Every structure is written in C-alpha cells, then in structure tokens.
Image 1 (cartoon, rainbow, N blue to C red):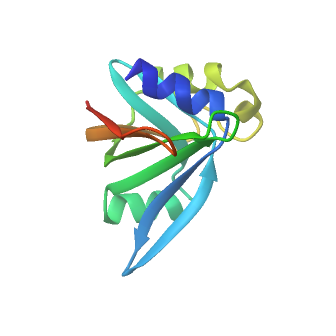
Image 2: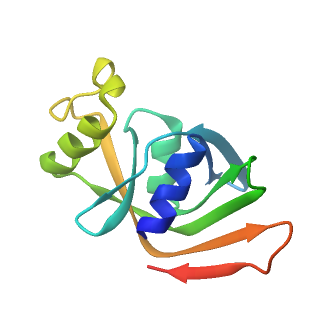
Length: 132
C-alpha cells in the first residue's frame, strides 16, 4: 500500500472514475494518504463525485508517470471515514485544502479504499497486482 501511495504522490494528479447511473464519470484528484492502515482520498460531501460514490462505492483510479512510462490502476470500494482525526490528518497532509475544507465543516469527506487492488503497468513489462 505504501508503494501505491508513493507512486500516486509522485504522479501528483490521478483520475478517479465513478458511475453516475449507467455512465462513467472521470475527474482529476490529488489527495492520497494512508490513514489507520487504509489508502484514503478526500473530497467534499456536497460534490457530485461524493453522491456518486455513496450510490455506488465501486471506483477506479489511474495515475500515470510520464517520465517512466508507468502507471497504476487502483480499483475497489470507497467507504466514508467520518472521524475528525482522519479529516485533520488529510488536511495536514494537504494544507492548501484548508482554504476550502475544515475537519468540523460537515462537508469534508475522507474516503478509504476497501477490497482494493492496485495493478502496476508499463509499456515494457508485465502487469503486477497487489491487493489490500
């Protein structure tokens, strides 16, 4: 899991795919942290992405490192972690978000991957999958 987090952080931006009804929706994200042994992301409860995840928790993210020609896909379910400590940890890791979010605002949402697997890929090597 640490390897997955570090790869995604190195990429800076990843793309998260959700389902909206019967249509895929993809958007850029930048938050990724390990909190209490779970790979987590952050968003706002008021956003459509949050509503889509609550309706269908199955998601996939993809991060590409152009310099190495490698990418990772992480698929699984996202579940809310409403603990204040998790929100604080995420906002401390990404201080620029403090202008928009607070651990006490009832909008900040930390989501943890469960039943997840990450597949590391490249143009020159066979894929390698890890589960967590």
